[in-house]
Length: 387
Image (cartoon, rainbow, N blue to C red):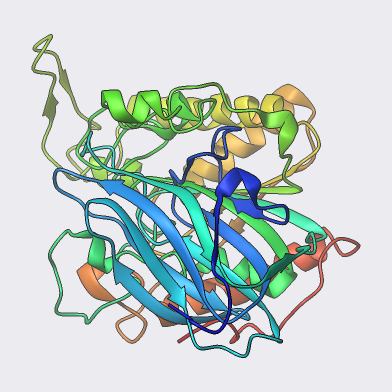
């Protein structure tokens, strides 16, 4: 460490100027980062900064990206256990810089042992206030919103945390483009009514009201994943829902069998290849129900159902469901936005949208949000904040 300046160790709860990103509990010691894009932000004047980070996993390790002055400068896999991680060193000690440490991977519902907590900092300088953004966005989605495939070569097909990115992601790029703080609630393979494999339990609406209700295991429960989320503490100006891709995919995958009950679940196709009207109706009712829940939790927010990066087979049903919700509720602060489809040129790893696709989606969505909330949004160049 830097021998010319005194490095002080502080519990995270002792850091006066700290901005926490992402849905979490009210605890700051340790601070647990549950979701994609969660993190900590400092305005730091000093030469050397370390974080004490604790992680665990049985299958899926944690990854972080470090951003300095809104530009990603490093990305790394974190070892299991409690370790000091150097964020930077040897910098000009008299110059203030914005520092963000971002969790790159989603909450891993398939790994009860997966977690990431920050305990303390070591720093040889001082922290300055972090300016609050004028707008807040919440993104709700599946693998696209988790950034699966947003990094890595097209040939990569392994389902591992390495190919997830919170930075090469339309959520982060959109937020930067409209100068907004943002949160992400997302899970690969999950849907509104059912997951990609017809599993009815893998639906995000069932867990929306908890801090991170889809996580299992004693460790995550002890860290507060199952607690009720404090919606009053953070209210978004816009909730962006990017769900439906896995619900559509379920029509084309085999039935799912519940091992506990023996019951089978399947979104059915008719003989002519069209969707079974009863199953399509069930999907639309699930959308209507979720919109009602979102409105209850976020009474003043604009709700935008944004869909289309991996096909648009569910778009007609989404339009019908949103129209039905608006007719039933009288709520007029709801809209549908069609995202640009991924192409061969914009594909990333795992046959998912790559960086170019996320940039294109962010460019379109940011333009729409600026029209929706002109008094709250301002724009940076859409190409900023990238490697």
